Image 1 (cartoon, rainbow, N blue to C red):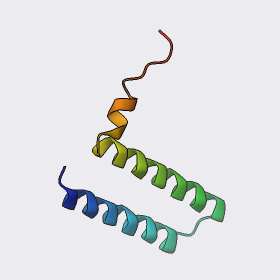
Image 2 (image 1 turned 180 degrees about the vertical axis):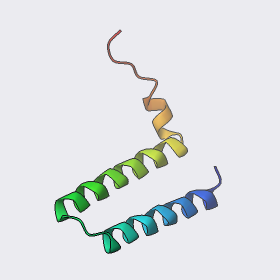
Image 3 (image 1 turned 90 degrees about the vertical axis):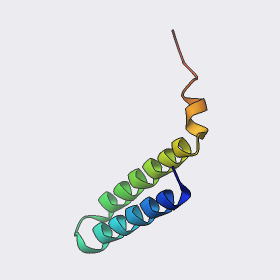
Length: 63
């Protein structure tokens, strides 16, 4: 995936999260949980885009 696409997706996710936080009324605890879920998802997506997560998925626990 080209770097420009990654940057555009990150900007889009950031703007969308800002719009949700700014204009949709919700409790502060729900906002913090939503922000944490989005940040963790974006970090995992970035790790998989750059190929770091693919080597971790080869590790199996158990059988």
